[in-house]
Length: 420
Image (cartoon, rainbow, N blue to C red; front, side):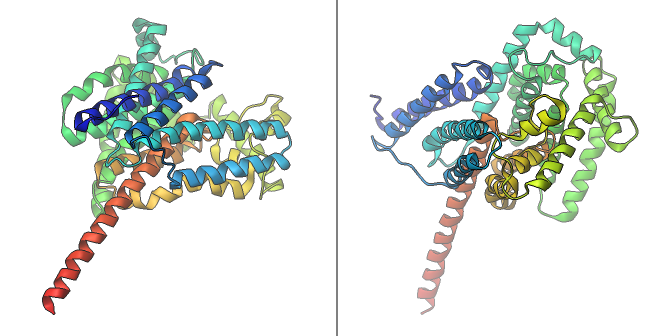
């Protein structure tokens, strides 16, 4: 058993906990398609719980946090949906998967619940993304990645995980590095950014581009709470982005990626015919909405949306839109429960968005909500890890607000006593 001897022992324990957290988050991606991955996730989560016991002097504390409460309610709803599901086994599998995803995230929460900042959790995301990007470079070869990026060809999908997942992970990590760089102006942050940029560009994912664009835009928008300043920041950033876009299109390494992004914008504005993937996604949303109108309150059971797509196309796939997918699965009632994960920390993160960490969490939260229009995120382990971070930062801010309130009350009491 590891013992904590003073501050040095606490530091060693924190380093060990961070290492386990980083390995756990990395394994979500590296072992995504391995059947034995669940055993690795569970083992690492149990180690995190053990470390939290050691940290709390051999005591195990289960705090009923907002994340834990929402997880309990959401999981209960998924389990109940087995009773009215088209295919009860799909609903049970979805509930079981969600239980484990929440357990993995909560095991990390248990260790960090009393910390005053969550910088180390964002560090874990960056290191995980660097490991995944280096592994991707090793699989394809650096020259092949450069060739694909310059020629406009995307990476081959599903080599070890979906190419969009790789791109999004790299984009979120780049966003963290950008926020850190803007805060401390330390050029050493460029070093881990290099493999991330290479893989992000080679992946050619529109979702990865959206994360970077919105994340950077939100950084400057949230620098101020003044409405006029926010508008001026938005105009400035959009002008800078257009300028950078023009430059990057003419740089061989980025030209293919940014040309695809321009085509995407043109199709969204109606200047270009939508590509096949956009047409398919639109069709999925339409058939999903039709089913939602038939079962609006409780849906057809967790994980059963794939049966709707199978009726239409003969293939069981998710509906490419988390809002529609959830409405089909668990109706308005369950969808409202799920998005309370985001609503609960939203207000406090928004009010404290001039704080760098809160600004980063708020940007992550907003970007995730926007991305949900083009992807199904509620089945991903990393989604619940991010949600745990949002709620943890919300608790940190709430503790700080209470301390300020107590201090203000003490000062006020002293003033009254002095006046008497």
